[in-house]
Length: 112
Length: 114
Image 1 (tube, chains in turn blue, purple):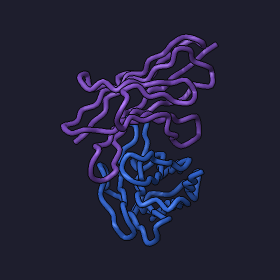
Image 2: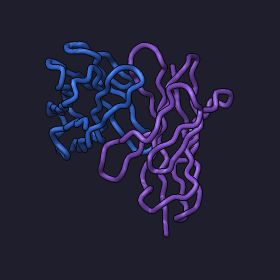
Image 3: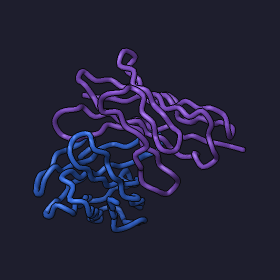
């Protein structure tokens, strides 16, 4: 079974802090994604990566950056956390076009 | 660009009743379509998908969805729901060429009561 592991289930950070959200997948998937989930807005794509060291902006990349130094790991970075980044963050990975996304259980980030 | 509309944010239903969760999409190119389910405090799981072929696709737990190209819809149905089907359901679309980049709807919360 594919496993996508997000390092933290809950995280509380202060405004202005630098925040790292880590995600690891164990199925050698080429594609990895970061989404944020907010009530009434569904899932919105922040960034995705289709190969090591490659990244593409999603629909809402402002205030975020990513890093993919190894195929199995995809990190989301909040350079200076703000209260409007309080949200549920979901990492996912997938194989080629048409194959399903496999999601982690999410990290609920609260910025105070 | 693709987009997905799930008009119903919440659907309350009694156990053993039928249910339909609506999904409409917009795209200028051919697409793949998916339904994902999210149980409380969990990530999303694939429920079923349409890539090509038969327009009616089924899941292992009794859900089915029909791809209707003329109406650009992919509604999810179940003839008889269980309490355990209580969850949030997301419809998603992806163009069938280029990068894998799903666009999700805003979700429909299915509330099944006894």
